[in-house]
Amino acid sequence: MKMGFFDKLKKKVEETKTPSSSKKEYQIIFDESKEALAIGDSDKDEKNKLQTKSVNPLDAKPSNDLFSESVSLCLSGRYQEALECADILLKRDPENSYDFAFYYGTKGAALAGLERYDEAIVCYNEALKYNIDQIAETVLSKKGLALFYLNRYSESIDCFDKAIALEPNNPHNWIYKANATEKLGKSDEAFACYNNATLADPQNAYAWGIKGHFLLGEGRYEEAIDCFDKALKLEPQNADFWCDKGHALVLLQKFDPVNGKIEFLDCFFKALEIDPQNAQTWYNLGEVDKITGNKERAEEKFSNAGTCFFIKNMFGKAIECSDKVIEINSRNALAWNIKGMSLNNQDKYNEAIQAYDKAIKIDPNYAEAWHNKGHVLNALGHASEAEANFAKAKELGYQS
Image (cartoon, rainbow, N blue to C red; front, side, top):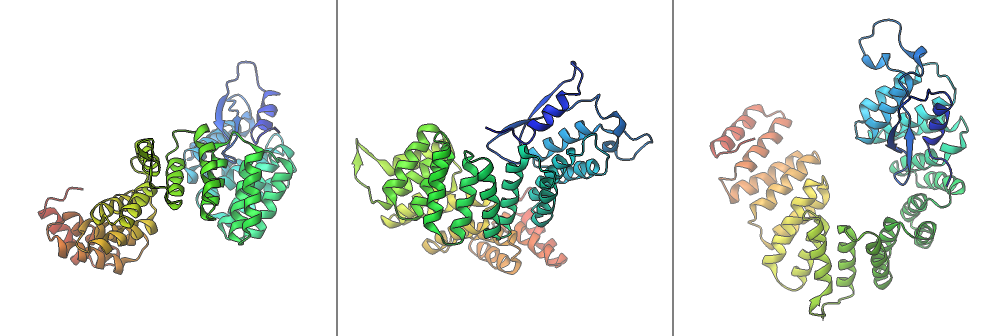
């Protein structure tokens, strides 16, 4: 495989560092499927230290140390701080001009993490101008993702094609291209890409899982199960693979016991054993109970799913689950509260208040619903009403 994004930097630094220099390992910030090294050499780039006192301590750090810090910050999701480091680096006069390619790449990754995709693309374009073959593939891949998130699917495919030409054995680029191709309604081309992903790396469990998920959506259940089995052989503790296999078995209507077990239930229970908060598994179990006429159990499963989706910030799915609970039992106060919180997070404040009012009407002692309604009223500028709701919640024993 070709050298990764930071391998070039490692080589450059090792040519100049002293034998006593230390190095730290970092995962590449541009491609989740690779690992690379960013080298921090406290003795290097002394000329980049500011000669005068600076309010910002980052200004006094050597460039390699600051670059390593920006990488670490990106990896930990602290994108604004990573962006600050990258901006400082880009104002300096580097020892080698191609350092700027790495700095622009890092800045692009930070901006993408902040969902500032247009600005990220500008940075990726700057990084590509330096024509460093060793990083071109990963920068093109990330540029393609930024374009994808901007719904510019044809342009994103062009980037993924260029990345694939440079590194055809990276399954992720095939998967990214498949996703974009699906968005354009080209199912056959998408399947070919998913297939190429598994051919590129047959030991990649995610490639098999995502191919199976695509086949599941296409109604090709037997083929999907075969993919999930391959994925589970490689990664048996992946709850999503067990969930998807169970879903495929349900859609195949395989309800009869095998060796004393109903296989789809065995898959769902295995998923929940691995991840008790696997929202999609709870949702699927709710659908099964609903189909089989067990409304009480379906209500419980959909309620669990809604809570788990909310915890994962998947507010649309949380609302969908709450509505399914309410369809079964309109007097489920928890479902109305979860729906209210989800609507609140979508900035649908008036609808959220209506949901909280429903919860409170069902259970006037529901302290959390009173408190949540107070937050929405505050957001709408109704301070006195908000305080009254907070007071009621506190009276009922609410503790923040």
